[in-house]
Image 1 (cartoon, helix red, strand yellow):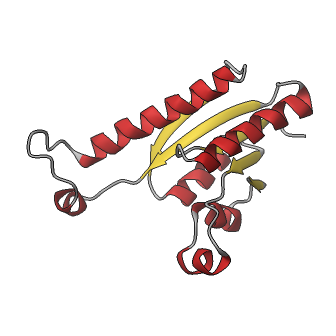
Image 2 (image 1 turned 135 degrees about the vertical axis):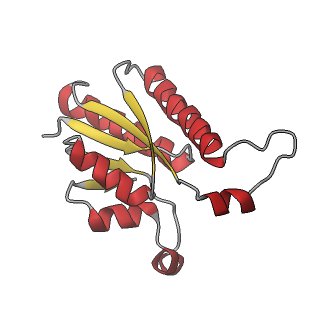
Image 3 (image 1 turned 90 degrees about the vertical axis):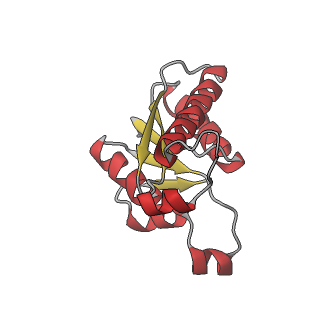
Length: 148
C-alpha cells in the first residue's frame, strides 16, 4: 500500500480536511506507520511585482521574505494539527514556485506514494476557466492524487 503521503497545505479549510484525511488513511492502512509530509508552497515575486505590491511605509520589507515567513507559519500550524491528532513524526517543508508544479516535483523527488490535496470547491465552469492547484496537480502528476 502507501508508505508516504504528501499533503500540500495552504492553511485553508480544505487543506485541513486533506490533512485529516491523510492522517486517517495512515491510521487505517498501517496503524500510523505511513510517513506524512506537509508541503507549503509560496509564490516567488519578481522585483517588479514586489515594487507594485503592498507597501508598508514603516516596514517595506522584501515581499519574498514576508511570503516565506508566512508560509513557515502555515507549515508549523499544519504540524501542530498533526501533533494534536497524535502524530509527532510529521515533517513540514516550505518551497517557493508555481504551486502545482512545485508540489508534483517535490512528490517525485522525495518518492511519495500519494498526494492528498484539498479542493478549492470551485464550480466546474469557473474551475475550467481559471484552473485550480488541485486540478493542475491531478493533470500533471505521475504520483496518485486524492482530492478531498
